[in-house]
Length: 92
Image (cartoon, rainbow, N blue to C red; front, side):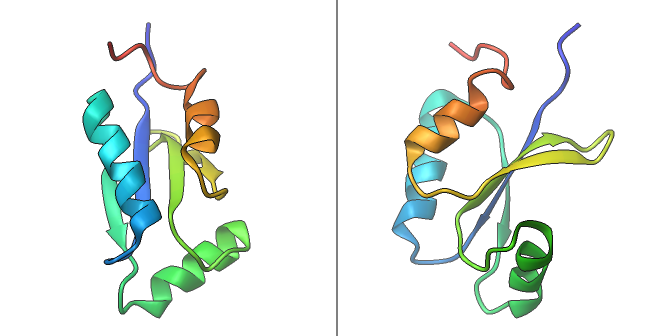
């Protein structure tokens, strides 16, 4: 049985790295949810307490069923692709 994977993209308006991540997910037909931190320092506070960063994009990959997520905090698609390699069922 395949476990359902949830993806959350923490992003802000005007962030080219955030758009790159979203474009990748659209091209690969991978569903995701977005948390927009634009004008919302409380969301940045959450990122800082969870992962020690205040910048975006941060991509959380995990399960809402058990609340366990792994975060990709490094900038660049290569980091995202590596994190997804063994977590997301084939989407081709």
